[in-house]
Length: 269
Image (cartoon, rainbow, N blue to C red):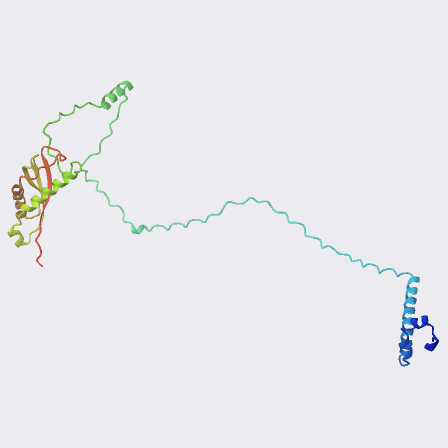
């Protein structure tokens, strides 16, 4: 235990050195605890040194031997040899077999009477005798050569031109045809006898005129089925003449036109 001296006997240097220990020494209750802590600390240090010294002098124990594990490999099955077989032909589904026809449904062919003779006889095949090739070729050239036929001379007086076979009408021709129909319509008379009997229909009148519009002839191309209406149409053709003069676009010395003449009873409201 260190010696405890009064503070008055200490020198200045000792006083400065012991300044930190003064509070511990002056408190008598903390003295046992301080001594115990000091002893314990020294004991720990000594034990640590002893343990370190003992481990340093003993030989290190060899590490444990490694465990050896043997693995057994399962024998693999030998590969199956693949047989190289060429691909066979592609299978096609067979078509269903046709059902047999019922022979009872067909009537037997009629028997031909051998006593009957046809109205005509089949031509008998004639045997052709071989001839000289030069003669046959000469006859063939004579039969196949086209014969020149002289063209008939043209007559100056041409036939009358029908309206349906003529060239497409121009504007002047269409206007003239409209005037022709209007003139016939103004001179048309519906017979009272036909009206009272309810006779009606369409009469197609064929007119032939010259270049000055004068009628040459008239006829009924298609009748209405009633003689009264057909006779009135022929009288109308004479009554309406002369007709409008045809224009230059309407060709021909004699002009033919087929015009419809209608006869219908007007309904009273």
